[in-house]
Length: 218
Image (tube, rainbow, N blue to C red; front, side, top):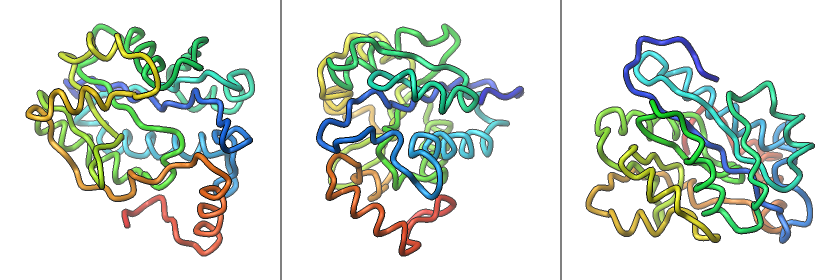
């Protein structure tokens, strides 16, 4: 949540949680994750990271909803600064990013994006991304594993192009276009998402075995 701070840099995080989870067969945002909905777990990770760096970066936390928005809004309304509902969520992630960026405060210096189903992303990963941006505020900061992934921070100079995104490709076209203005942070866990019942089984199996710790990196 937004916190009073002497920080001069202003960053807004958006958790992208608008998808319909058609392949999973149930809302991934509400899948149980250690006793709470996954969407709440992810917002908790953002909140912990933001709280750690609050004296250096003034942050807001927003969440973009679409499918199942009425139920999800009830679940998260006390956990975020801003809830955005993308009525055209079926157009894809790019459209949700574009919609969210258009709602940014004029004082925002950058926007951070992370996906609701990136369940292996921890507060420490998000903190690494923010620390790199704090050191290199003119650069795009992105996670890297086998490919470039969220979490990613885009400085304000990219807001106009982000606001024009559409379709289901997200912001990867911009990461490719501006690769020379890009700094990467190695985060192997950024490759993991939750799209299918088999992936849900894998997640539940790992959680049952105690293989995920939201305080540390792996």
